[in-house]
Image (cartoon, rainbow, N blue to C red; front, top):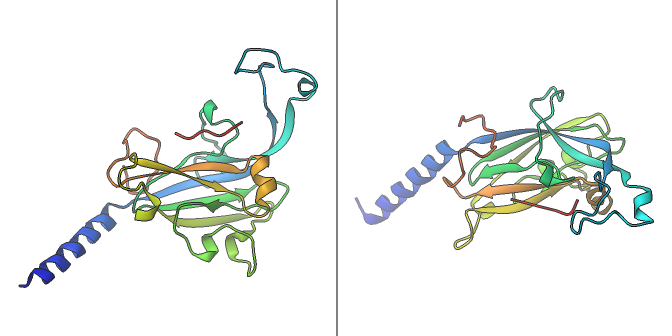
Length: 212
């Protein structure tokens, strides 16, 4: 058998093994209108001083956030680290994984979920523009299931750390929605480099900060 055939067989086995090891990561995320307090302590935590006037007159403002739940009943929310602030839940994947996000819009306005760094088709892009795709606008009270893929290009490049951070956000009116709070991190880890202790949901068994 020629060396070319050996190489072809080797590549086939490599890709087959990668596909078998890939997992499906399932998330349940809702967009919800909330009252957000920027300084619940009443102090500037950078210097310990009280919040100055006139900003101290009103610390709580209406916002819209992404909130993660345990299943598609959307009745039990998952705890989120305080250091994430107003950011949505962290979506994690390894290179080769599929990410399924069941999205419920509990807000008063239409929203969606648009990922950076992941592969998707138009119906799963989560971005409102013509021609309008299925997942581009999720009406208040409606649901949509997004299917995204962490490809080799989604993960860290040679010489980078084992994980890379991307963002997801609503893309109906992104400038307004991102400032309202509809943004969260995506962490993609190189194949086989994920910490088993990390919170990474999977049906196959088994840090990011932003100004608050």
